[in-house]
Amino acid sequence: MNPETNRRQFLKTSTALGASTLLPGIGGAQGKSQLVDDFQRPDSLFHGAGWETQNPGYWQIKNNTLRRRLKNVGDRARRTGFPFHSSKGSNPKGSGKMEVDYDPSLPVGILWRRDWKMEGAFAIEIEGTFHGSRPEEIPEGDKASWKMYTPGNGFLGVAFGGKGLFESYRQIGGSTMLAGWTDGEPGGNLVIRNGGGKGNKKIHSKVNVPALSAGQKFKIRVEVSPAKDKATAHTIMQVDGKEQAAVTAEIPNWNSKGYVGIAAQGLIDFDISSFHIEAATDQAEEARHCECLSCWAIGDSLKKVDGKWQVKFMALFASDGEKAEVRISKEVGPKEGWENIPAAGEAEIVNHEWRRNTAVITAILPGNPADTPHFYTIWKDGKDVTFDPRIGSAAVGPGTGFVGDVPSSGSYVGRLPQLKAPYRLGGFSCHAITGGLQERKEEGGFQIAAKGDHWRFRDQP
Image (cartoon, rainbow, N blue to C red; front, side, top):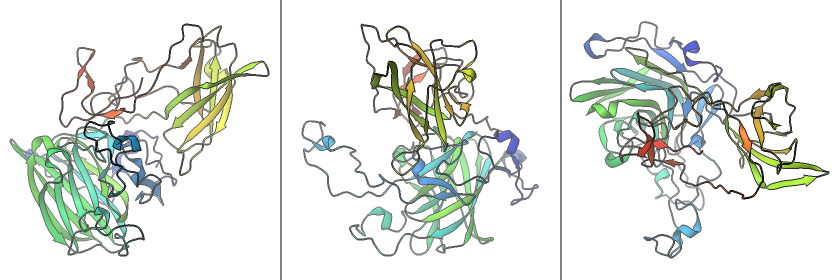
C-alpha cells in the first residue's frame, strides 16, 4: 500500500475481522473494523507517512510487515550524551566523575498514528508474527543484570491515550496507556499499564499466559469504553487463532482519550502485519506529510570557483530517495515557474548506518551574493518538496509536533541573505523536542506551556 495515499482513499473493511465486526460501545454505539495499515510496501527503514515517532530506529518495513529493529548504531550511547555533562561545574548536580558503567537498555518506543486521535468508545487491533525471544546467552561484555536481559522487559502491544505524537522513548506522558504481551516468567503476561509520567509503569491489570514461540501468529485487541467517571479497557490476546487470555482495567477517562499506536520494548523480535481501528464515528484526520525535513546552506562553504560563487547545501528527507536538486533564483517567485528553473546543483541521496536520507549538494549561485538575496527550492526525484502541506490543516497544533504559522500559507521558499554588512549570525538549539516551552494561544500569539502530559514539539524556525 502506497504510504502517500490519502488514508480515506485506502481505508477498507477488514477481511481478517469480517465486515460485520461491531464495537460494543456506549449506548449501543457500533463501528465497523477499518484497516488503517497493512504495511504492503517496499522494504525501507522509513515506517510510512501516516506514522510518527520520536525514535524511528525501533522500526522498519520488511517483507510487507512492520518489523522490529533490534540493533542500530548509537543504541548504546550514554544517557548523558556528551562527556562534558559529567565534568565538574557543567551541571549544578554534576559529580565531576565520568560515567563509564551504565545500563544501555532502551525504554519503550511508541509509533503513533498521526491521523487518529480517539475520543469515546473505540477498539484497536494488531496482528503479527513472533520471531524470537531475548537471547539466552549474554554476549561478551554485557551484563545479565541489564534490563534488556531480565524477564518482563520485552513488550509488544498497542498504545492509546497519547496527548502528543512525540510521546515515546524517555518522554512519555502519564496519560499514555500500554496494553499487550510482556516476556515475564513463567511464560509471559498480558498487561494493561501506564506508559510513563507520575504513574510510571503502574500495572492496572495482568494475567499470566504461555510464552510465545518463533513463528506463532498473535492478535492483540483493546476495547475502550468510557463512562461518567472511569473508562473500561478490555484486552484480548489470541495466539494461532485461539484465545490465550483477557484482562480488564478501569482507568480515568483522561487516559482513554488521545492518539493510538504500536508499542515495543526490549530484545524480543516480532512483526506487525495489520493495524485496525473501530469507532462509532470516523474520527480520522487527513495525515499530511512533509517530505523535506530541512535544507540549509552551510555558510563557511561559500567560495568563488572559476569566477562563479558556489555553496554547499545539507538536505535531510523523511524517506528513501535517489536524487536531490537545489534550484536557485534571484526572485522569490520566478515568472517562468520553479519547474523551469534549471538545477543549480544535484547530489545522490545517501542512506546507510551513519547517514539517513541526506544529500550534500554543491550549488552554483546565479549571481554575486553580495549584490542580491537568492531564493531556492529543494527537489527530490523530480518533485518539488519545498512546500509544507501540513500548514493550515489538522496536522498543526498542540500535540501534533508542528506549530506551523510561518507563514500561514505554507507557500515559502528558502532564502540566502544578501551578504552585506552588518552581518547577522544565527544558531540552533539542541532543545527542539520538549514539553513545557511554549504553545499557541487560540486568540493568537504564544504563552508558556503548562506542565503536565501535553507534550509538544518545538519546531525550528
